[in-house]
Length: 371
Image 1: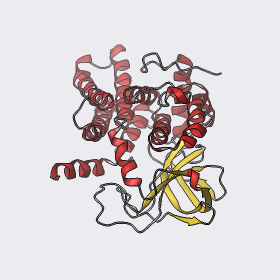
Image 2: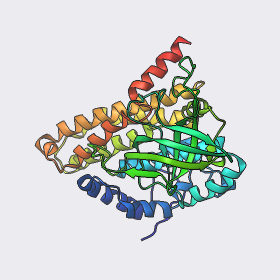
Image 3: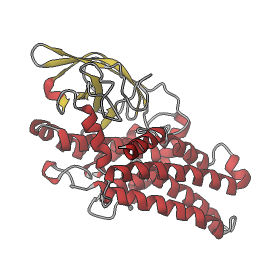
C-alpha cells in the first residue's frame, strides 16, 4: 500500500494509512529490535520527507515549525521512525545551508523524493557528548580525494540510510576553540552508504527506540571526493552551532511521545477506569512542552539557539515524567511487559541521551550565561 503525505495541510494529521502502518510497526520492532524496512519504504514514498527541502529543489519548502510538527506527529505513533525522520531532515537542512550548488542539485531532489534517506554519523566511543576529541580521520589524497578511517557509534539510521553526514578530524584538535561542540580541527563529509569501506552494524540491543536502526558505522579506508565535503575544511563547529539556531528540535519527538502517553491514559478514562481529573496536570505539561517547541520552530525568541536547547531539555523531561505517572496511574496493568506504556517510557528516556544530550544542553546554556 502506498500513501501520500500532503505537507500543505496541518502536519499534526498524517494519512490514516501511514498512521496505521507506523503504529503497527512500533509494536513489532519492540520484539525484534530491528528497523521495519517495509514501513521505511512507505515513509520514503509518502512525500513526508519533502517537508524540509526548499521548493526549488523539489521539496515543500517547510520551515522549522512545520518540520517540528511533522516529527511530533510521527513520534505520536512511532518514536523510532520519528528519530530516523528527524535525522533525515537535519542532514537535508545542513546541505541546504552549507552545500555547494552542485551538492544541492545532486542531493536535495533525491532527499525530497525519498530516493535517499540521510543519517548523521557524529558520535563515537570515547569522544564525549561534545565531540571534541574524535578518532575518525579524513586524510587528503592526491587528485582531490580523501580517505576516511574510524568508527561511529549510536548512529540512528545505520544500515537503512543511503547517505551519512560524517564528522571527521582533518587537522589537530584545538583545545582552546571557543566552540562548545566539536573542534576547529574537524570537517563534515557526505558519504554514500554504498561507498567501499562503509560497514554498518546493528548488533546494538537498545532498551528504547528499538526500531530506530541505531548502531555502529565503521569506515575502513573509505575514499570520497572533495566534492563530498560539506562546508570549508575545519569548519564543523560553525555548522554544528547552526543546528540549534535553526529551531528544529528533538523536543518535538518528546512532545509526540508525551501525547501518545496521554492518549493511552485517556482511553482508560473513556472506559471509566481512570478519573479524568487525574490527567489534567499531565496534559498541561505536554501542552507547555509543545508551546516551547512551537516557539523554537517559529523562531520568535531573541535567542533562538537557547530556546531550541530549552525546548529539548524541557520536553524530554516532561515526556519521561508523564510516562512514569501514566504507568503508575494504570496500576498493575502498567507493569505488564507488553503494555505500550513501557515501550513509550523507554523511548522517552532515550531522547535525553540523544545529541546534544541533556547534560550537554545544560552545559551549553550555562556557558552562554557566562559570556
